[in-house]
Length: 343
Ligand code: NAD
Ligand code: UDP
Picture 1 (cartoon, rainbow, N blue to C red):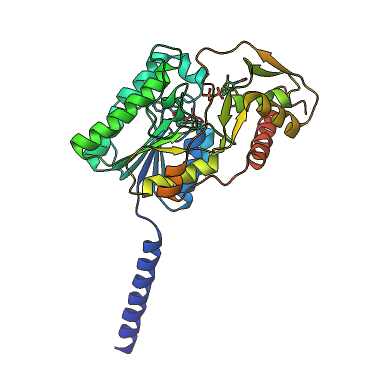
Picture 2 (picture 1 turned 135 degrees about the horizontal axis):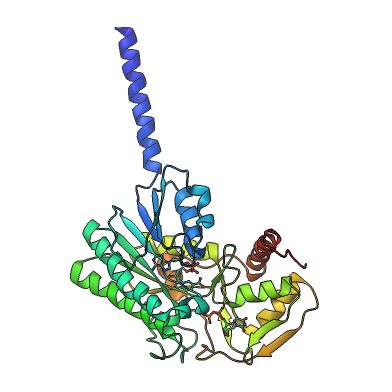
């Protein structure tokens, strides 16, 4: 009898231990659309490390299996190859909706597809959220402000977007994605969060995505001319990817329902940025002004008062540190690619 009681007591202790371990793991089953992309894959890393069961839905238009391959054998991870323009049937309780090309050359490559992804795709995701009762975070963008007439940009600013310009497929696509989110929230009681993401950089950015960070780093590493489009006085404010991931998770877990800017408010002109990269990489390659691009927003800097107040969030990684990590990544990628590296 003593042995039985001892065994029962041991089982009780083990059950209590299991319960306490369980309580430490947040019981969320997030889906990350676009999770094989640059931002998505970093978000997946953080969610997986926190013990969540993560499903990635991606059509690999700009994403790579390689970005998430370190999780493919993990029992908490699932990778679904699907285009979000088609309805999706999965069981989840949180959705980080990131699927959309993000760099201007990628989203301009097929403007109709970009519009479909951000409109029909977002309807599918909000419909899924409605069906399963999941909370949705929409990855919107600073591009909803267009070429802004208000500086820095607060969330209350309605924007200045050319509806028929080359950037419209993305800008208007994201604006309608926001509109859809609040329509589903109002009409169908879907719980939505809207992050207006400003220029983000870091390892796993596409080498050939044509954005300023990747272009300048590659040009500097290859000893090529650094190409500043137009006069170079246009500005951007760059945030490191880990800061963005922290902001997205804080927003998902908050009770704040209005759109919120997630970006680094330190602003640089593009010309200045070219000098910063050149100095960090080292070398004597020239910086040259080339033709300006159409509808290029002239100034961009987030007002992050809301994020500070409601999420207790602000960026932590300095441009110097973030760029050094990114340059190290590009250097490594170049070493593994055909043709090798110059510096
Ligand atoms: P990315 O191109 O690296 O990732 C996008 C991912 O979405 C890719 O894996 C791609 O294959 C996938 N995808 C695209 N269309 C799809 C479709 N129809 N169905 C399924 N998957 C699809 O871009 P990113 O920089 O990681 O951006 C992620 C999100 O953040 C995007 O929604 C983007 O608009 C937003 N955002 C990014 C930035 C930035 O600076 N990186 C700035 C503002 C907003
Ligand atoms: N840009 C540049 N040279 C390049 C690539 C971009 O001068 O090789 C400029 C571009 O005209 C814009 C800024 O850098 O003013 C940021 O461009 P990017 O495509 O990275 O993102 P955007 O903020 O315009 O979406």
